[in-house]
Length: 377
Image 1 (spheres, one colour):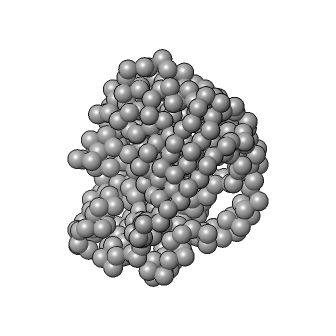
Image 2: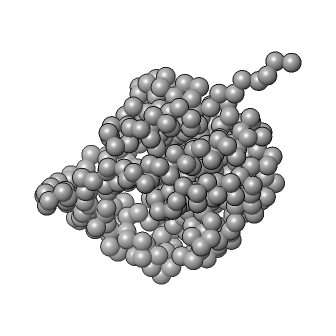
Image 3: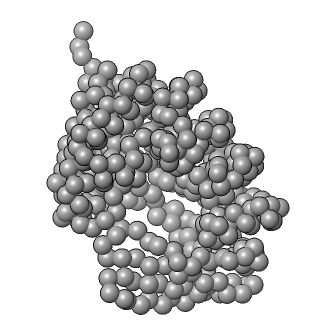
């Protein structure tokens, strides 16, 4: 009998279907080998690691179609003043938005040596500011998937393509500092709920429009961690997350794609609700004390619902521990989660520092080595 030939793509899809491939897929999450436009592939200090990733990792290429959105899920024309100032290696950007109900201000900064944006002042400080933001009319964006041919050709059989989406409650929460958002949700729940409902209509319409121009393999829904314990009780997760993430998942499934629900933190008390949303996979499943549930228990509960588990290698281990410790962590994860398929070894985050620290590079190499060594079936 001829032996089955496994490609990276076939291996990942088998895991997503909770089938048993030849080995556990090994992912490096946001370090994407097969996307020439990704920032990590432009950085010389990342080159050796990215070459190894291209050679031995199962690629989940993070990619989204472009769109003409302007503000808060809308493509309505907006009046924004922009001011930038440079201080050393930091660029500070101040945006002033003129809405029909008054001005809003947003301040962010980026550092030359860190691939992220820090928000130092959010658009909204009070629920009244949220009403200002919502006074900008909703005009559905237009999506452009012309770049899909490029990313599909680059990835090929080396992996799958995964756009990222934000759920409505997260979009609402991101208007404010996290602590201000929690006060808003607790003290003015009807106002917060009404805002989420307004945004959900936009999110679902935009999702349908995005899927009408292009359907990828797997969609990551981000944001549920904003409504997990200890920040909010499970009842708030059920109210603000479950209905809308469930609807998003159904729309994606109707177009033939799969869904991975992204939720950091302590998920033990909301895991059944996450699974009730109908997702095909969850991530990143952090271990205690950052999470509150062990990987073997996550796998047991997910396997019963035919949901694939992605995770549980914390970035702090890859950045701070030894090669031997990394190897032992991977060995433990495989023992906890690989049996029966439905598991993808994956870090919970990715490095953003430039240049890449040599110790982090070496630990990533050890992580890949161990994944290949202990992941066989």
